Length: 125
Image (tube, rainbow, N blue to C red):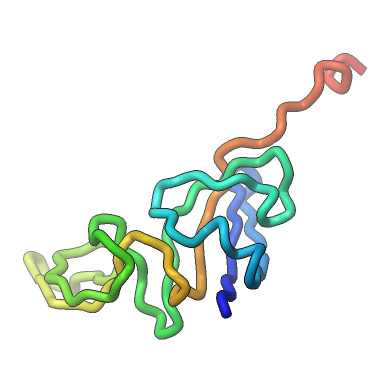
């Protein structure tokens, strides 16, 4: 049973909302990678385009864009998603998940990159 919490952020307004998707509504996200776009009708935003920015699995392990595949791996990190170094030059082996969304992912972070265009009639009134 696939169940996602999709966080939709609007950079222009500075707001975000959470949409829960299950089963067939969640299917368009399976197999997508970080950076790909999805149609907004999946999360009840018709005529919008969403870009996948990241996410995490049930244990809170983050998705990292430069790790390929959809599995959890232990990689050496020097910063970025999944590791915040406390000292200069610090590196550490951390568990992160690949950049492909699978059924093991729980949370998906997205942002709106395209909104519907306002009609010219509204602007003239």
